[in-house]
Image (cartoon, rainbow, N blue to C red):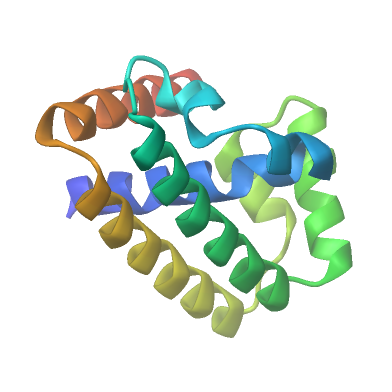
Length: 135
C-alpha cells in the first residue's frame, strides 16, 4: 500500500510540477529536465513519450481543477510549501480527488511502460528523496 501511495504521489509530482512554472517553461523543457528525473537518463524517444503523457494528463488535470485551485497550488509552492501542502491548499472536492487519482494512476502506468527497470528505480529513489525533504 505504501509503495502504491508513493507511486501515485510520484505521478502527481511529475504531472503537476509544470503548474508551478511558467507555461512556456513547461512546454519548452523535456521531461528529463525536471529535478525528479535527475539521473534517469532518458532517450530522446522516452523524453518524447513522457512529454506526451504529461501533456495529456496536464490537459485532463486542468479540466478537473478550477483556475482558483491552480493558482492556490502555484502560490503554495512559490511560498515554499511541500507538494502535499500545496495539494491540500486547493481544497479539492471528493469528486476531484477521485478524478485526479484516476489521472495519476493512468499516467503512472503509462510512464511505467516507457521506463526501463533501472530508470524506474532511479525515479522512485528521486521521489522518496523529495518526499523525505518535504516532511
